[in-house]
Amino acid sequence: MRNSTLNFPFTAIVGQEKMKLALVLNAINPKLSGVLIRGEKGTAKSTAVRSLAVLLPNVKVVTDCPFHCDPDDIHKMCIQCRDKSREKVKLAVEKRQTRVINLPVSATEDRVVGTLDLEHAIKKGEKRFEPGVLADANRGILYVDEVNLLDDHIVDVLLDSAAMGVNSIEREGVSYTHPAEFILVGTMNPEEGELRPQLLDRFGLCVNIEGISDPEQRVEVVKRWVAFEDNPKAFIKQWQAKEIELRDQIVNARKILPQVQISDDTLDKIAHISIEVGVDGHRSDIVMMKTAKTVAAFHQRTDVTYDDLEESADMALQHRVRRKPFEDVVLDRERIASVLRHNVSAST
Image (cartoon, rainbow, N blue to C red; front, top):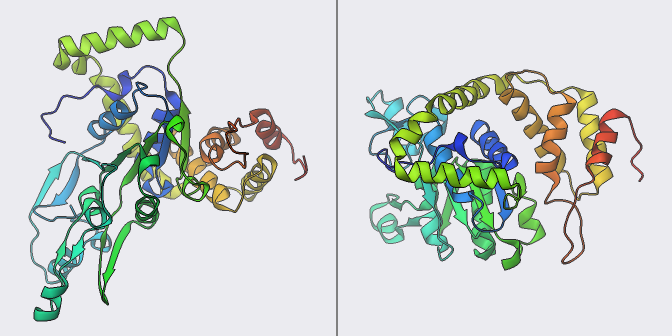
């Protein structure tokens, strides 16, 4: 995305608060492993993703590095940048806007992970790697529209990289690894088919969104969009103060996050919530813990409250609750609130 592109301001999007919060939380903490946004067309999903990229602070990158390495963090550099840094070679540096990389549903595995030139490796004894989408997305946002229509194996690869922050490719005994830390955003319309439960579970957060039903809010959507189309620069300037305020909040939250503490009592509540709502495995507990800490950091606090946990539970559990085919999931929020208020037993 070019700096000259004029995007609708993130803070000007009407409603869809859960979606906006999930995106912001992933911007604060990429280790949440992305967000899946499920809902009908025309609900500002792609607008929110593009707007988030503009909202985020610019990033320092090594000029001409295909992986957009951070010049200040040798541990997250590619092999070439790391070697230059260790040899005290001065790296050319520039600042760039956070980029949005779109992944088409027709993408092949080689296009996603990149390719190794085996012939060159055999003849020259040198690794030659042709970067793919994951390299391009490093330190940016990877946006996959209609992710449910993507090949399951490709989704698996994306989720692996989102969780680990690296991409590893191996062909005929030749391997290559590079940084691939990005905010993964997948969108889908459930009417067009679901993801397998195993893949759903590996998305950190999930939000279900619908078109706005309140007449006043719908009118406001139209008014704001017309104002943006008529004079985008003036409209963006009108929302500039709120954009800067949210950007500063995200920057501060990133600094606070490593200091956030979570008590054993709160961890106990997390375990009880997972048992009460009926989820498989332990990923839900881990994601709830990470999300609650990120919510606390977003609110500029170093301690996790039960409110943080309640706010996190819906996004972390929505796609993990066991259900029958064609059955809509509706989380029992009163049951979650009850767990937070009392030390309830694991039985229902």
